[in-house]
Amino acid sequence: MPGFDDFVPGEIPAASKLNDMLMKQVVGQYASDAARDSALSGNLRDGMYATTLDNDRLYRYNGSAWVVISEPAQAWTPVITQGVTVTATNNFSWYQRSNGVFTAQCNLSITGAGTAANTIIVVPPFTLADANGAMGSFFIYDASSTLVYAGTAASSSTTAITLYTDQGGLNGVGNSPGLTLAASDTLKASFQGRY
Image (cartoon, rainbow, N blue to C red; front, top):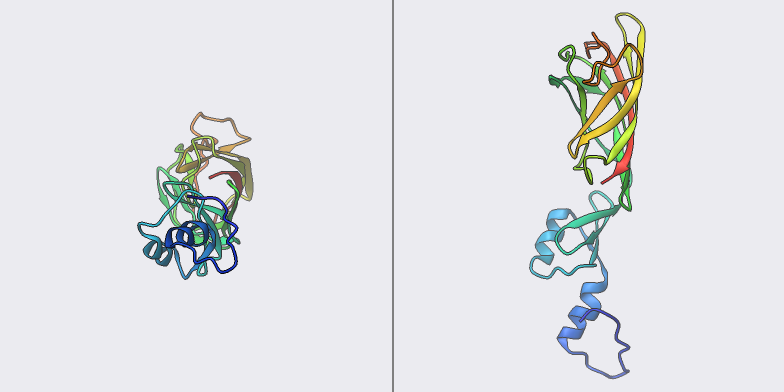
């Protein structure tokens, strides 16, 4: 019974009207996602809204899941792979979602090493809308030879953003020949897309 009801003064509304007209159409406020899920278990309806205080997010329930409508910038520790997981120090990385669109940035000091001739992949902080859900740009500062590699980034799946260099001859797997993330390199990237 979603909709609107203009209650008459003195009317004692039925519980179903209070539940459907009021309780399920307000923006509920909860301490966390877990508190929201616990409080609303068995009482969900498509179109419900909720806010969570621990991460300042506004959600909308789409009939099967809570979807982020808006949030302030969120801290992010990116996972980078190049054949193997590449260890790094996170200097400053963040993401933000709003109405189906996200922005993300990462700034990492590489402390480990990747495997030459393998694709450099950044794992996004959440599952993307589809395999074409992200694009962006990046710079790799190679401390050992003072080279700067620049390029574009595009999602290759809902859980992987691949880096493609603009120089040095593309080898088909996203890297210039010999480009390997190594200790003392710096990776800076920005991404935009849909979630």
